[in-house]
Image (cartoon, helix red, strand yellow):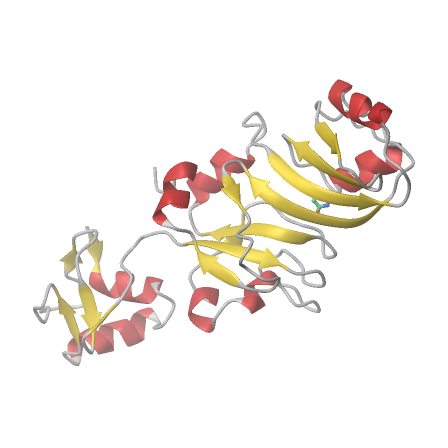
Length: 235
Ligand code: URA
């Protein structure tokens, strides 16, 4: 059970004060009935409407964004355009944050949510969730590079990386890299240590969640029920 004014405010469309006024104006109905007070408790999944239009009463929101190059993965930045700026206003006010960052020049799958437990399950060290990246390098990749990734790369500063997969593709400057951890600039630094600097990087998947091929860079959509179930959202 959740307070009605809190549910309305969590959509990002109204502040808590506006939500209270909305309920008092009689424009809100819960299961077809005008509630007595904004503080009334509402059961999860109940049908809440404003002017007859249903609102989403789900506690957590899960957004897939195809991050384009040129935006930063933080929620606020004094100078740069952030990934939140690519979402509509109402989604900018519900506490979404990216589950694992991508560099400013990296493209691809970014999951945004306000579900801290899911973020923990996907990011915490020791969880080792697979992240797959499509990579283009300046140079020609060799089977020795794949073998070195399998053993575990040691970066220039001595940082040791977990064993990772590097799959060679027909074009020798392209590969797929699968990481099971998330160190700063990790793909770029691992390939730099092999003398093959990354010139293009795109994340394709996080665990079972794959970037929707129909989603152009800069566009977003909410996760489907199947995608949410595969990630164990809301558990
Ligand atoms: N590795 C990198 O080097 N950059 C990213 O954005 C993600 C993984």
